[in-house]
Amino acid sequence: MPRQHIMTPPKRKLRNIYFFSVEGETEKWYLEWLKDTINESQSSIREVVFDCKVEKDPVKRAKSITIFPIRGKTEIWHFTDYESNKVGDTKQFTETINKMVQATKLGKQITYKLGYSNLTFDLWIILHKMDCFGSLADRRHYCTHLNQAYGEKFVNMPEYKMEKNFKRCLAKLNLSNVKDAVRRAKEIMRQRETGDHFTIWRGFKYYKKNPSLAIWEIIEKILKDCQLLEA
Image 1 (cartoon, helix red, strand yellow):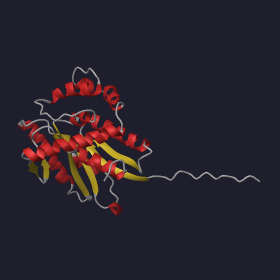
Image 2: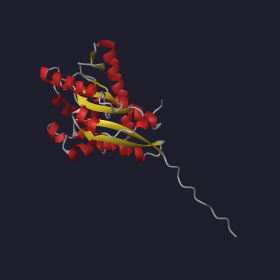
Image 3: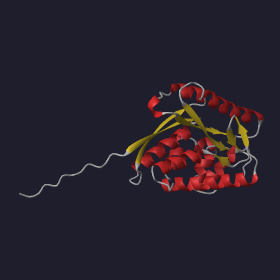
Image 4: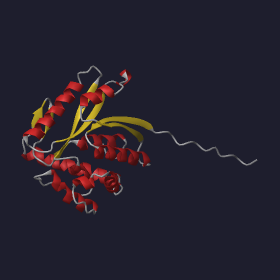
């Protein structure tokens, strides 16, 4: 009688969950793309779940999350922009940090992390494709860099941020581009640290000079957790 070969089912990957609050749809679309791209990768040792909500108020976000005591402290990354040094923009930025601190005092075992971009989240998207190390006078100027990086002809930033247009840009990316973005972001911050003064507000560190950003920190951690980037 011929020997029967029993197929061994593939080993199920362990699952990691990461929590985010973001201030715009583009950030949410990006994280959804990143989650799907990691989960489709045969090289990833983990499956990832992103609990992400568009919510400008960290307190409201924290109140909406169900915390499981066995997990210990839950880390939430808030993606926000430092859009300029104008009084209105800086006040909004520091008020966001105030809300992050307030959210940690709700008694829900929450730790908030600051994933800021200076000037905007669009800097992070550009870094997937090319360097963007020079300072810009206005966030609208990112449009030229985005067109260059993605081979597009967007007339302005609102056109780029339309869902079909933004997702068309995402379709041109892969995990190698994400690693490039982390590398470029770290170089930007190395330049800031060697030549510029930083600001600390309520325990959170940031730079008023652009470009600067901290989004890369959680993205790098996720890639390392999945063994897609050397620890």
